[in-house]
Amino acid sequence: MSKTLPPEYYQLLEDIQAVDFVLVELTLYLDTHPNDYDAIEQFNYCAKESRTLKNHFEKQFGPLMQYGRSYSNYPWDWGQTPWPWQV
Amino acid sequence: MFTQYKYWKPYISPYDPCPPIRVKSYSTPPNLYLHFQPPGLPQFKPKEALYHGTLWPVLFSPYPDPHKRGDLDE
Amino acid sequence: MWYYEKKLQYPVKVRECNPMLAKFLIEQYGGADGELAAALRYLNQRYSIPDKVIGLLTDIGTEEFAHLEMIATMVYKLTKDATPDQLKEAGLGAHYANHDRALFYENAAGDPWTATYIQAKGDPIADLYEDIAAEEKARATYQWIINLSDDPELNDSLKFLREREVVHSQRFREAVEIIKEERDKKHFF
Image 1 (cartoon, chains in turn blue, orange, brown):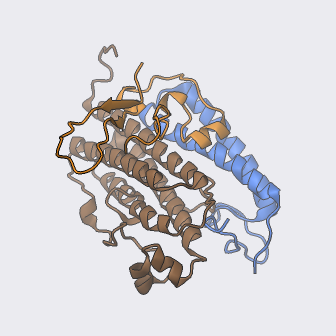
Image 2: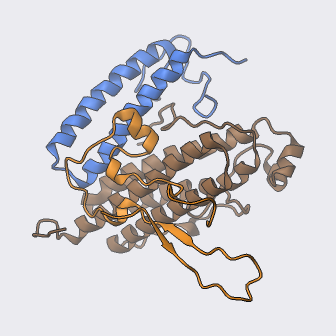
Image 3: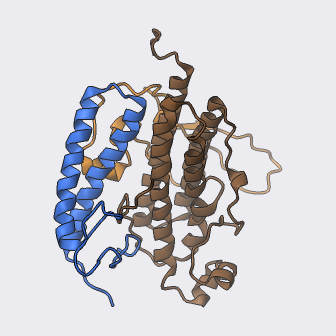
């Protein structure tokens, strides 16, 4: 049983993937440049931006993180499709 | 500045069975030349970064070789 | 502790139905220079590496699992709707006989993954140079797979993964500089 996802799903997901990618790049950079103040500022700013986008995404499409790092709806929807390799 | 690709001409023997590839190339990406990344380098915007695979243009390594003429090698 | 986030790091798209590519892609799933080897290598080395570099090994190791998931996604999309005949034609007959459409940690030749693909010498210089070499080998492997593929959307994902190897190599080279402890001395590049 397949559900059709609205275009907004893909757009929001892309926005999240983009900001999370910046966070990954900054994380690796900061691992070898721990004293770069500007990079840390940018990192924390993006971290907040990522949370905001994910809250928005999760309200419509369910939890992104497991073990309580995202809230659950009723009934439990962590296991709902699509999983990332099915999208 | 550095170039992203290097080229060389392998020795061609008159007894080689197959039509020779005259010029071969290999990738020499920025990580070979950058040393310790200096702070404050220009960045891509987030979506550009995602689609390039890095936040910093200086670290971008195009593939295949944008200067390749036809399919000479590799 | 590990947490899983239910999204791919990069939006993987596959345009063409060409199961033969799955046979080559699996090299980066269960092969010697693939993402599983990378993840396990770095995450294991971090228990004995000097403290100042543990963060980097943890973070790159974690990212490699995200890349493993991307390769799995590509293989999944290329094989999930293939018939046994199509799989046989794609050179995946032997794989299908054993696994149906299940993925498996093997290389393109069908050899199963082995811990002999990784090393942990306990010496930070040896370990970091192995890591740099691993990233360069992975970069090269992605080049060869891109050469084998005509699918422009699949190639976007492969080029992303190749670029990640370049960046990881850069960070490991920086880690070597950190370990050399020459950073605070005057140097001009």
